[in-house]
Length: 331
Image (cartoon, rainbow, N blue to C red; front, side, top):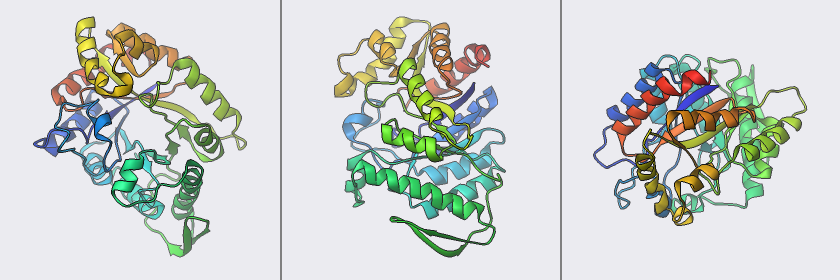
């Protein structure tokens, strides 16, 4: 089992300094995490963001993912780094290919590119981007991945002719350090899962979306994906969870109370959050058992984020607690 940390470059208080966030990334590496990933959004609905942070909703804090990743790449030496996830509808694949290759160069081969079809209509429409129906976004994601790989892997110039993207005699150098950087996909819809089976190297759904992602649901979906692979490729099973680790049930419930600000989770109890797998929560032993249930269903790579997002000291303590009391029991 590999463990990654979702560094919250969003949902912070306006006075938050980037070096403080970067310090969490290096701390995650120092205590033994395997990856550090960041969100790639321009904005999120205020009703959703207030369910994760105490930062003022009138001043939503969002740093750019790819410039942040360049800094993280320079400050670390071992962990995998990348977006979780970059939406192709907001990030043209030509730029994604160039940014990702550059980050792979800076990090000397540690890029993990995670992509998605995009799902926040308000984010697209607020900035003037079209938000087509899901089938069109899925097709654009497929083409986007093909464009990225064409640019990375072509020995001469790259060419591509699709409905959404075109390349004509494009020279693309330098290539990534990795011969074939892995591309994973987020999302959990049947259409996304079919595309993962057809083209991706890993699947990394986010459990906080919807009603959660139970071990049984995760295992059935991952088995379906792997059964659909026709070229012998191994699809790594990953997932993203919010997490609260504390020996006191009262403190766990207090930390999770912020999630109840979301209208769809307003009435949830601690047991509801656990049962619906919206968050990993409880003592170190309980969280270990929760992760072990996913491992039994094929989970190989888990990303954790800690709530509230703006509690940087709490995140540091949680990283240490994971490293000392959870990770050694699952490797």
